Length: 128
Length: 294
Image (cartoon, rainbow over all chains, first blue to last red; front, side, top):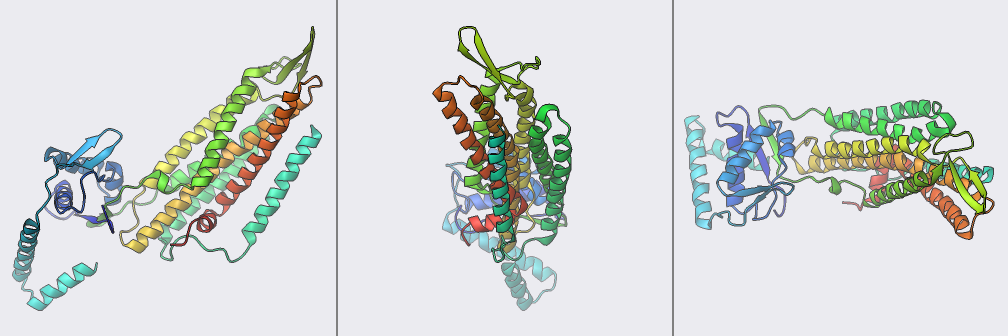
């Protein structure tokens, strides 16, 4: 991991279960190369305490990532990104970015937001 | 023996004066960035100082309770245990993040990132010295002239001539001491885990830096308490043992050298005690002075 450490966010009001929110974010960070092969994930208890979640919730997210071959856990060595974790190509990254942007714009349009308001919301989100 | 005790008392007095002068010097930089999460800082400081005050009271009571100086020897470990309990209680009772949306920095926090390196090395060295010295004095102890086990040391001065000297740091002193020091070191490990494992108080870089400063301050306190827990019994054992061996009239030259080496070690333990007391009383100030500006 290089530069400023990324953030993980969990919305407990979201219908998506917290473990799945975590799994998606971590899989995204591994796919984008932000988490490089060999990088260590936070210990279960630490991440669970920081997010105010149960340890089992974080453990389930890690188990799912392990099943997908993205991370491996070793007793005493923590959970690390595997060396053969598939990385996203630039084209895939661009495609996903457009996909997320389209979904956001669609949701914002359903709320009746103008183009200016949508751009303002994105600027605000980038600033936080 | 009186001369030796006077020497150690003088060293303690000098160390205390130096510490007091250092603590009242104005102008030392405060530790941590300006945006220290004030509520958490106040909460953990209250518990930490509660531990220190309780430790002084309980340690003082322990010092006056044991027979033949045993209470004095056990007072420092009791004090250290109380301080460590205060630190653990403070860290464990920090409220975890609430609200609908929660965030965490993707990071691995390790105990060694927050420990003061030189002080930790000194405390570990003192603990090893204490363990070795206690093992040797326990193994060589004999009953004293009243038959109390582990309170004397004996030297054969010639055929049929044996001299016994005491008090000596045998099992009478070292067994309860070993139990308390071991409990203290285990508690210190638990306290450090609690310090590192506590939830972050925020995720923006300034708050993370301030939060790290708080953790570093707590880790310094734990190390300081551990140092006191080890340094006082080490100094006590050294002085008592040196007094016993230097009062043996038929001692060979190497015993004299060992006696003076023990006194030198007592001096080092007193120096460590001063360092740890300074860290315990002003952890933020010591940490800020020791760390490079960021």
